[in-house]
Image 1 (tube, helix red, strand yellow):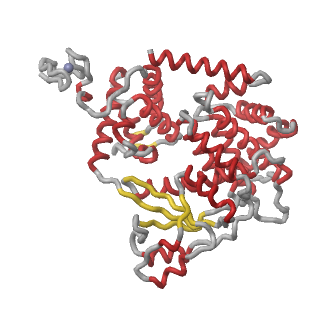
Image 2 (cartoon, rainbow, N blue to C red):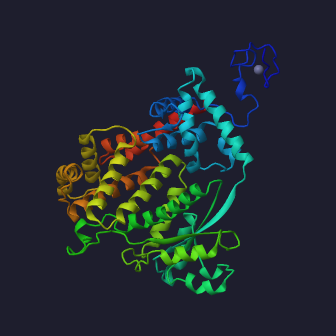
Image 3 (cartoon, protein in one colour):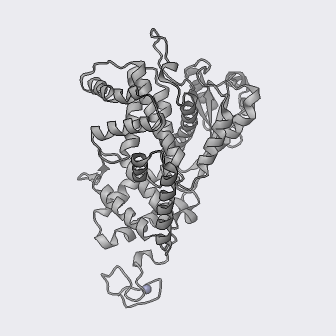
Amino acid sequence: MQSCENCGNKNIPENSKYCNHCGVFLKLAKQPIQFKENKSSHLKSLKETLIEGSKIIDEDEDGRLSTSKNIEYYQNLVWSYLKETTTFENEMNDEITEKEFIIHIFRILNNVKYQNDEDILNEFLVEINKIAHSSKTTNNFKIKFIFYTNIELIDSIKDKFCEMLHLFNLKIFNPNNLSFEDEKLRKDFKTEYIMLEYIAKGKSFYMMEKEAINRVYLFFGYLSFLHLFRKNVKMFRANTLSVDYNLSDIKISSIHELNEDNTFIGDEFNSYCILKDSETYEKSKLIKFSNTNLLYDFYKILMRSKNKKIIYQINEYLILYYKASNEADLDISFLKFWTLSERIIKNGIDRSDNYVINYMRKILKHYKYPKSYQMRIYYIKEKRNKLIHENISEITQNDRNVIKSVCDSLIWFLMEFEEYVKDMNEYEIFLNYFNQDNERLIEILKLINNLKQNIENN
Ligand SMILES: [Zn+2]
């Protein structure tokens, strides 16, 4: 016989999973993280996601787990549902970040294969409680990451720039504050450009470093995104003799890790070598900081949104946007923009080429780009196939810039309507039915969402 820690019932048959008196899932009784009430529709989606995700995990004879599919998609979704449907967030206080969650997602999804249908959600929560427990028993540590950049800051916009950095959890770091054992090294660590600082907290150096770099890339992505936003494609052409076709030229040249007192983690001479070996970039010239007010206000509004899933996605897209903008090789830059727009449009779902092309046309039309852009998409797609399958390059700057405009529009569309639209499927409806009468559509979507909320709460 088993007993129930929830109600004290001692007459539970040995093989039961549930208490025959209070109905609790026995392994979950007295666990700190529990399901919230009234989340049945989200729980249903969580369960579907777990089942779907479990199908992409392969397990070899030694129990090693792998996948050939896009696991991040499931990681993002499971993470969002976890926070939505359980007391995880209150219990954990950011002790496990989304980035660290990826260490566990393979096992979580794979375990689903071994569960009965009715136990999947409960077993999932048992697993989450195990992860939380082991995380709480190992200690967190803090690392201050500092970045050398090629950004020269004009004094007149410094205050606004710092405020903007704050939105991205970044700060300007003053190299005079570095603390050396060997003072002779100090002069080498000086720079004429700004240095950025990001403090990461976690349990894995690798994850923290990745998080810090992504923070800076996100910030760079946001700057790159708005600096040529909706400019005519002919307005940003590099000289045809040029070998540099990048649209953005802000870069990180090296990263160093500090303790809280600004001493180097590890050997400072080692950091000195990294600094000396790092590439020196010319001063960034392409990005102007003249529109910092707009930049600041817009991101601030976006961050206030309750729609965390969309914010997370927009941030991911901006990081990729930076990588595409900062690519000097025209073909590669083109491919990176193309892949980004496909990724936004498909959003983890298998879609045909035609679907993608039509979506691209629709979004260009929606934002009133010249009709010629829409017409060209088909031919650009042909060129893309030639490039990928036959390695024949016919990509022009205009082609790349048209695809960049597609990315601009897609990301802007997400930003503009995040308040009214709850997920990508709704974006599609929104885009398809968007016409002159969009006020009405916004009203309708608001009503639908209120209705959904009411159903969930009752
Ligand atoms: Zn009980």
